[in-house]
Length: 102
Image (cartoon, rainbow, N blue to C red; front, top):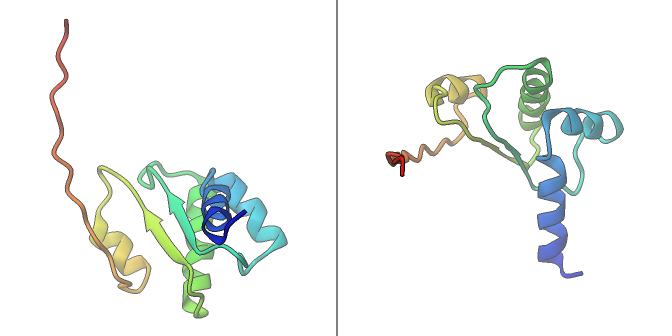
């Protein structure tokens, strides 16, 4: 297995779900070996997601090099940026496409 494949596997493991991420935090609070954490649909609030965001923020504040990627079509990017102490944030605006019935 190449290093690139190893990194991809770790990214997918960490981003499987907020619940899996919390289980990972229990055994490995520093998320060693994980370079990125992706949380999709971050606007869909749940206890697991909220706690994951809290733990990730604390990890970043401790100087971890981990990259956190939050994705949402409707979340307020500035709100999340301020929550993460104005870390670098990139907004990508997506043009929606109309669906057609056939």
